[in-house]
View: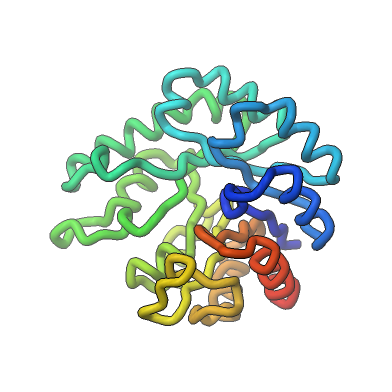
Length: 246
């Protein structure tokens, strides 16, 4: 059975208590966290419990994980999180060649050892820059995935599509290595509202073949995301309706 979670980063511009109540009212049972929420873990834990929500996974910054892995493990256990994904590195920190990405993959794998030792799932969440062409060699996401067989992927299908790639191809390529998938939709080309993103099922992606590919790859953990919705209630509701019909 497929599980749908909501990435709370979508609602970063609204009060957390309002967001959790809204999600519970729509019918969501699960959420995904992000680093900005970790400043008050007890309050977050209470909010989840009060609204009948569970946090199956969270994003956790690489530098924070490297500087205090024990805190990362403790935070995950307190919140009941089973999967920890490093979500991003800034432009100034990104390698620009194959050798650099190989080294980054090794760094990422090393940083995740305490997470794995704690019995949690660990991996990387992509944007579009990890699918850039490196003069004919493997792409950055390949170097990350190949750094360790123990490291999983949270494949963001919207960013894959925005990078000009077919999500189905990448799902198939890393079948068995995708622990969760971000489902997000693209607005028609040239749209600038909401940074060019759309509610899932209301954009340009053809979802049924993508869903078939996810099912074939055994991906049963989906995370709804929109990077910049002007109305998070609209996004949450319409996306929930779409996924309910998958």
